Image (cartoon, rainbow, N blue to C red):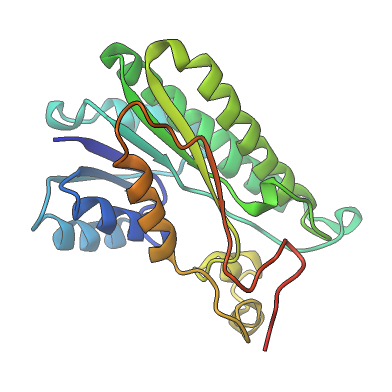
Length: 249
């Protein structure tokens, strides 16, 4: 039975992915910063598969390695890594950007992904197999007005996805990315710093993707035969043509 390690599992795409993979009989290591949510999800999914929770912030380097190295033997072999944790802060022109927001996005979206991956690489290399899925964004394919540093962080994810695929190829490790467009999660609430009305407006007058839509795609990707690697996949709601073109009613 396989084991999947999912960051950002306490909400949104990560939570939906945990549910989808549990239905495939895949054991789970659920990671996030909100312990009470992780415990609640563990209670739900433990009816189907073995579940272990790790509460940590991916941007805290020492904490990442300490937590991952503390995994019990039953969960020490990781077959699938879903690098899902990420965030966006602010939507300002670059000249007006908040440096603390920039640091937070780069620390979580780029450095956090690297820290978690670095801690898990040796396990997969030792096994001679593994599957890494990096959750990117359409923002990593096309820069949009006021997206600046968030887009830069997701372009970095795109580059790291390609780099991992090249460098880990000789170890038999599959690497691919899923890049969602407009998906209705807590993402916009975080970006607008709790302004729920502004966040709600992002998804009005059209049908956005749901976390479950992305989770189903991830489930499909990880259940392909081992010789099949979906290297880079972009998915948008039908109403979205690119980062700035959305057909609203």
